[in-house]
Structure formats: structure tokens, C-alpha cells
Length: 125
Image (tube, rainbow, N blue to C red; front, side, top):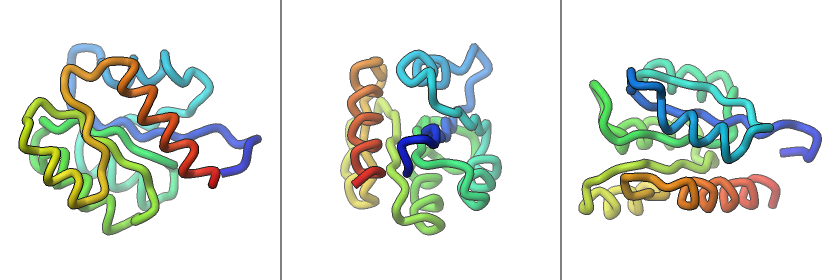
């Protein structure tokens, strides 16, 4: 990723109450371009088009859960940094197997910022 290009972040969450993950991400990285996806098809479409550099995925979603969606994204783009936000303690072992970061719910802005910083370093190295 070149320094001149803005970071493109996919936020995949099914939330009718103001999309808290997207709002927090926008506060943390106001210069980034956010691509929001309400379902797996939208998320996979954005990834297939190359429209994103990294993804934040809410675990609880209709259809595929967040780790199932992460596995689908990982098959399409093995290089993309991914994080799943989840309250299920046992999900971190599934996340590790997929090389996906695990952010426990409730996701704090500090945890999101730490993932984003690590992801940006990975993208620029």
C-alpha cells in the first residue's frame, strides 16, 4: 500500500442500530475509506473487486457467522488482514486457525486501534 493511497477498510456487520463497529472505526481512522457490508455477499463482493485492504467482521450475523465469512475471505485473498469481533471465548481458537485476529466483545476503541495499527504495518512491509 502506497503512502499516498488511503486505507480501505471493510466493516462487515449486521446492525440496524447505527453500525457501532463502523462508527468506531471511522473515529479511529477518519482518513480511511470505509466499505460497509451488511451480509456475506456484500463483503465477498467488495473483497473480490479488490476494494478493501483489511476487514473487521462482526461474528454474529445472518447466514455465515463471522468466522465462516473470514474463511471465505481468506480463500479469496490470503493476504488481507482480518479481525473478528466476538463474545464467544472459544471462537479465538477457530480464528487462530484461519490467521484471523480475535477482538473480544465488547470491542474497545483501543483494541480496534491496535488491530488497525498492526494491519497497516503488515500492509506496508
